[in-house]
Structure formats: structure tokens, C-alpha cells
Image (cartoon, rainbow, N blue to C red):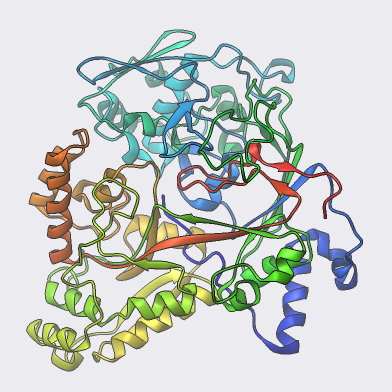
Length: 609
């Protein structure tokens, strides 16, 4: 999924003026501080014993699962909506387990047919969209409806790539939806009653899915936020406002949403029976992760998320004990972490702990290959890749939290090769100058200014300025264009940029999830934001995507890697290391590279500040 690039890299400023500005901004961003700065600093004020206090780093796009797909939105939607499967919270390597499904799917010998039994004790939350306001029982028909709705072109989903070409008859059904009257008054037209060969509700509690080809990773797709189940009654009742009125089967229900300020949730009283895992990794018990084994979920009654556009107010709220977890802003890193990468003793003395995770994440800078110059001048792209000092960027803007990426595939996935070095995966200004001359633009002569698109914020601006500075050494001029997170995503989907800084976090633990970012048919509005097209790469992708892990599949993955490296549609940047701080009262926090904000597993210690 697209990842917000710099959630903890947005300082307001230094000195007394900067500190006062940060406190005032915190009072605006997080309502608990609106009582006044002195009250915010009071150490005697106890946090609510039944409420998790979280933070997201920007506004969410929507509560509609069809518009899931970025880190902030997934974090929030995950509290309300559920899919057939979810990732096991504690076990590694990552794998899925039943959630709304009653068991793992029964897969035919051909790998083409999946039969899924659904639980019979799941109900949607109470909501006015249902008769008498009482949530009804979930059924297999809800799954069929939800996938048809995702395929409906009128929903303008960002997630069609998940299903495209995979389910028998669904692409044709999607094409037929292009002629439907506009939403919202025709949200369930007669087309929805027409059967799709690959989607069948065999009965109220059994789903049959028929695929066009065997996809070994298909079980992972059934756990994605895009495939969360929605109720037709809610879509029809709320119409255009459905995106603001989530109605799901998940552990929580939304009680308040004040845009740019906060979101609040309470436990869903209709939530089905689910318990904390009884099994995990060998070291989980020693660090207290098994204390709640077998307890009914969710463990926390209420959630309160502050919305922070800048990192400094979030950091100050965490230090004041008003947030239960936080990342570490780059400009505050030395305040929190010692040179040996251990947490500072004064924070440990307050009961604060640090948890780490090697993320399934790749950061990159994409060229828009539909641009008449960037698209044809491969040597120019190669020169820019060689001129960008990635190591300096990681050290300066991420405090060294990560490693340079040499391929789209991050460590921990099949196909990653720690010994591989891309021919353009190094900082070499002399080689860059030769490549630029080869492109016909020695010293940058004859080149226009380029535009670099990034998310608004101090940290992202600094990253962009560093990139522009590196390019100036070649004589290439780059101008920064800042956009809000929703605007940024919109421009990416429409291909309205020349150069863009982007990142991808794994939706599922398979190399296909990263290699599909360069598959030609996935060009915008799909996830191939570079609009990269190479017929050999595309042919290899189609073969690799339907294969089980094997030496033959590994060879295809490495050939695709090498082809993309030479074509240079991206400047590969980093694979990220996540470091998160948690207050002493918060327990059961185990970071997960593919599960968004699994707060239903979190617990709170009573009497702990």
C-alpha cells in the first residue's frame, strides 16, 4: 500500500519561539491540550483508564473500504471493517488466519476454486440503516455484493488492481458497469443481480470463488482492507455520505469524527467472539505478550485518535503522557535514542519502551515515463540515479533507520538478495556526469526545469530540497511542488507529475506485491505510477505471478529485477526500520509489517501513567 513517507519527520522549529509554537499547535491538533499549556504539562493528571490514545499523521481519505489503501486510512478503517481473513498477530513468518471466515479456504487441486465457509455468529453493528436500528447477521451475499461494488467503476476505487483479471467474469461485469446511471441513487441497479461466474454465494454461509489462473498468494488478497465486507443497506441508506458513515462488523464503532482534529471509537457491542492468541513466537512470553492469551477482544473499550499534520505536536503530546505511542521525529532522535541505539535512560525511567520492526517497505523516486523527455531519455534517468546521495539522505533524514534499496523487493521476502547491487544503486557523481553527457545534456545544458511532487510538510520539503541539491551538482534544476496527502494521492492516480517521491509497504508477504508496481497494465490510476512499460518484464511478471515459490520463480524474479534496474523507471531509495515508543501502561504491542493498527489486541495497565 502507499505509505505516508515522513510521519515523524516534520519539526516546527527550534528555540523558545519554536517551542511555544509547537505547544500552541498541539493545543489545536489535540483537544486534550485545549485546556491550556500548563494543564497539559501537569504530571498528576491521570490518563483515562479505558481509552487508547493514538495518533495519525494526516486526514484519512474516506471510511469506504473501496478507498482504502494508504497507511492512515487503513489504520482507521481497520477498527470498523473486517475481511474474511487477517494476519496472525503474533506468529512469524506472516500468514493469514480466519476472521469472518470459519476456516481456511478449501482450494481445488487446480488452484482455481476457493470454497470459503463463513462464520454464522457475526452481525453488523447497530445502525439506523437497518430495520429498528438493529444490525443484521452477516451472510455470503455480503461478500458477493462487496466485491461487485469494488468492481463497479462508479465507486472510483483505488483497489481494482487487487482483483483485476483474477476472478472469472468480474472484469466483464466491471466493463458493463460503465453504462450504469450515476451514483448515488442507483447504488444497487439490476446489474448487481446478474451472476458472475467466479463469485457465488452457494448458501448464506458459503462463498465459492473461481479464478482465471491459480494465484498462490490469493489467500492474502482475501485479508486486504479493500475486500472488507460492507452492508448494502448502509450504502443505500447513506448514499454519497456512506464514506462518512462506517457500518461494519469490527471491534469498534465510530462515535465522533472532527476533521483535522480527532476520531473517537467505542467498543462494538455486536462484535463477534474473538480471543487473544494463545500461540506466538518463542520469545513472546518472556516479553509479556502472552499475558492476555485467551481473553475476549477487544481489550480496550474506547479509542481516541488525534490528527497531526506536523510531528512536533505529536511528539510533545507523547512526552506529556497524552499519547500512548509515537514515532520519533528525526530532529528529536538524539533526545530519545543513545548512540548505541538504546533508549535513553530518562525515558526508560518513565516506563517508556521502544519496539522495532524491519518493515516490508521500499521507498523510491519515480519518473513519469509518459513525460516526453523523461520517458525517452533512459541515460538521463540513470544519471539522476547515480547523482542522488541515498546514504546521506538516510542518515540525515531518517537517523540511519534503514538501508539503501537495491531492488523493489525488501528484506524478508522471497527473492531478496542481500548481495545484489544495482548498476545505478550507488552515489557516483563522475559516472553520473558521463551518463548525462551520453544523454546529450552535458552539464545540464538544454534541459528544462523538472517538477518534484511531495507531500506537504517540513520533513518532506527537506527531503525534496536535498534531492534538488544533488541534481544541481549535475546542472539539473528541480523545483518542489507540495500537496496535501489527498491531493498527492490524486495526482499520483492521474499521473499528473514529472518526478514523485513515493513508497510502498507490503499488502501481503509476496514479492509480487512489489513487482506489480512496475507491471505495465497497472499504470495510473493503478499502482504503476511511473507508467513503466517493458513487454519482456510484463511477460515475466505474468508467469511469475501464478507460480509457487521455487528456483524457477526465483530466476524470473531476478530477471525482472535486472530489467527494471537497467531501465531505471525509479531511483531506489530505502528499506525502512521502524522504531516506535510506547507508554508503560500500554501492553501487547508487537509491530506487524502487514497488519494495520491491530489495536483490538492492545491492553492497558490500570494505575500506570
